[in-house]
Length: 501
Image (cartoon, rainbow, N blue to C red):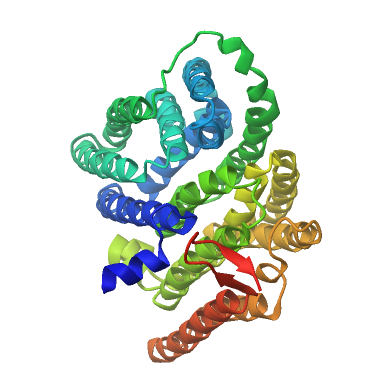
């Protein structure tokens, strides 16, 4: 009986079944790998101390900003084109994969050489920490292998191989945590970075082997033959995608550099980095769910009855982020409980609350980003990120004296401004169902998310915050359900799609 009902709800070849299967494996992979990662970061933060943890964060930030330049948006390129062409034009997919790998290897090596050469200048002149020169040089390997791994995972998402991605994530996550804990225990900061390089290299090898196996299942041969014919993809999709992505990390890095140059800057950076460790699983949860949705959106973009997934694309990531965010805002003491007393006090609690607030906005907007990618509207994404960057830089310039709290507040202001400017524009252009963006339901959900943060800033007792948590959670669950239920569509059990009434 149960399986008959399940088959009615999720017909085997339906879009909903594809999403459910992909989402299930993605959730498993993310939950385990991020759980391991958080455990590792807690141990590392306690060993290095708040200032040392801030130094590690600055190294990661530097490698990350250059890594985006090396990546050239190739992971997203692989996802979109593999999903779009894997069944109809397998030969093209083989050429596109070869093109993305070769481009990633060349760009990764070039940017790594730049980092190797520029490390003394970055350490001494940019962030005022000459002791980080050698550690930044170690980051060259991390930059290269992360670039290759990003393309591999992007291609796997295009194949909708989420079970395989979950397995790879589990193995590589375990390896990374073990390596980093051992590295930092015996060799402190250099050991941690060296361990990250080794883990990234192993991840790239394991991921590429899994990709070759998956490509073989689709009778796709990764070949360089006639690869020049695919070069237009780089400037029509990859370049604007890269520009959109490349705006964010450099601006984040600039704000980090501004922060560490303040008095006690590395300790403030350590606090901010600890708060964002709680953000990382939520963002990855949203992006991993998005990796399931994007290939489906691409493959069905020419269909007329696609309103179900247009709606799900916006709501799923937002819902997954809203509930954990209000939990962490309510029980903000968790940051000192896990990371230690160096991360305690009202300032730490407020930083965590602000980080969770703008994380909810990020997850709200992830669905919009997927719509732009699926419809080749990446230049809109470039413009959106440019506005975000301008607001962030101006805000933090005036708030930098507040340290980690000023950075978290500046990021929140940047995301709020960006949302208020561009969401009405997307709604007017009918890129997504309008009531998922602008409606009384959306206003109620945001009010429910903001309420615990206000209580946190006012220093309310745990009992009051807990009581409010039950109320706002009930409101959020009800309104999300109402938003889904009252969408004007009914289900066809034969196709698994929703059609207008």
